[in-house]
Length: 192
Image 1 (cartoon, rainbow, N blue to C red):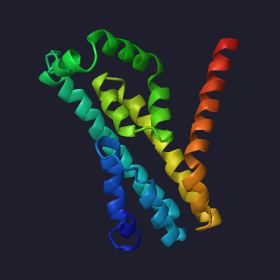
Image 2 (cartoon, helix red, strand yellow; image 1 turned 60 degrees about the vertical axis):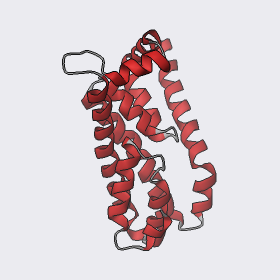
Image 3 (tube, rainbow, N blue to C red; image 1 turned 135 degrees about the vertical axis):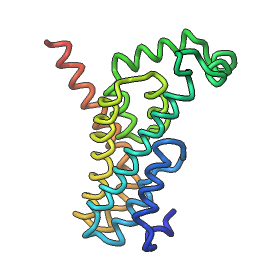
Image 4 (cartoon, rainbow, N blue to C red; image 1 turned 135 degrees about the horizontal axis):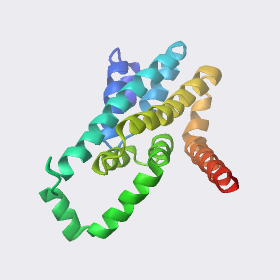
């Protein structure tokens, strides 16, 4: 992936990797985003926007995978769902997770989009549970935008020496930020 950082096709590759990572591919686009930003620091925010665009289009594709492959238009489970109910988890467990999604949908998508959790699993399950699409897109734009623009800003501000800091600590900082953010909303909710 790093070889794309020196290619004239780097921006297109970044869009494609971000798309794929949000819907089916296991490697996050952060590695290519960092390489491109280090190679052309003045275009760091442009690369973040390209990464965000690919990620959002990929999230829509992931949502579609979950939405259309789990149930028929008539609302009946497909063979894929039947297989999972028979061999992976029960329908009761599925319904419990669906209730959690319905209750905390924005925060689940936000957390997955900002932290190192596998985002594609959450885009697919968002569609699978038919969560509100507009809310899904808003949560995705906010969380992925924060993630990609934070990385780009760090490189734009501090240059290539920040790369090792991002590699070591960005995921921990992202998790801590998310825990503090959600914890503050929970605390405010209990106080009100």
